[in-house]
Image (cartoon, rainbow, N blue to C red; front, top):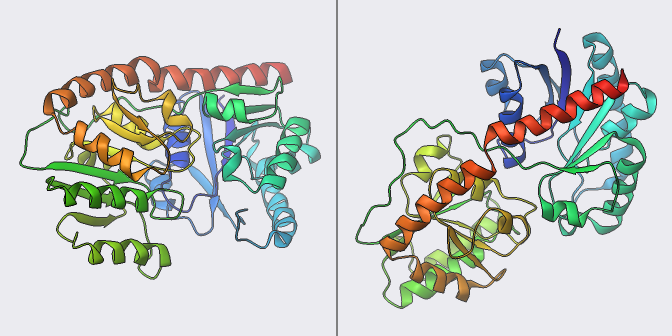
Length: 370
């Protein structure tokens, strides 16, 4: 009989964190029976139903810099009661919480010390509200069984504890389309991936595009990521595009389902977040053979070999990004980077390698519990 694992994730759409845990669950589905507790505002129902996973929906309240945190304890108590019943009815052995600020695992562990609780740390300290980070970190150390840091950067950022282990996100080795090969075209085609929001760096990307277009460089960029037409940040980006006559250069794609096809249709991927504990975008782009230019924002340094598979440039520096784009225009450089990127990902981040570490962790904790 397979042990049952309940994954708690409050993502409303297919985020990098959710995609990573989903790849791991799919890979380990012959060893464990996975259940999911997702947000009642989530758009992920259809994927779970298609793959025949059991799930329930919860009214998660996300802790961020804008929320009224006084509501958090009341929502936590309600969700704890719902989950306690679900765990008992379905004989759940392991609770795997897919981010640090979700304290449901801690509260369930307090009520039932026999349940195994694992917590993922997927963001760096500077992405959280500082006082809450310290409080939440202490609670995890005091109560959960194991804490998984998604990268060495996240591991260094977290307080020292024997409970902390480091396991990278898995990169699926399955590809639907032919292997990517760099092509020469009349312009350089760039792709930025990530939800359009402050901190993801799209404003710096557009500034860099403005710099090189002014120099007469032929370039096009597509920005793939969910956005709201009424959002102030989106309008700020659009205003910059209109003001600088970049409408023929910049395209806002919104959410894209077929990311493999999109990656393989471009020349270079840009990740310019201000803070990343890892980077699903860098991982996937390199896995498909795309060179990546990234800001020096934490985790991408563990994926990109600077000058070999792409470039790491100073955080928030549009000028340095522009220079890197000009340099990577050489197709011979891109060909070498493409080959190196694929080789690197398959040797260091294969789904087999990383999910086996997660499987070993599950089994070790189950054995300790007896």
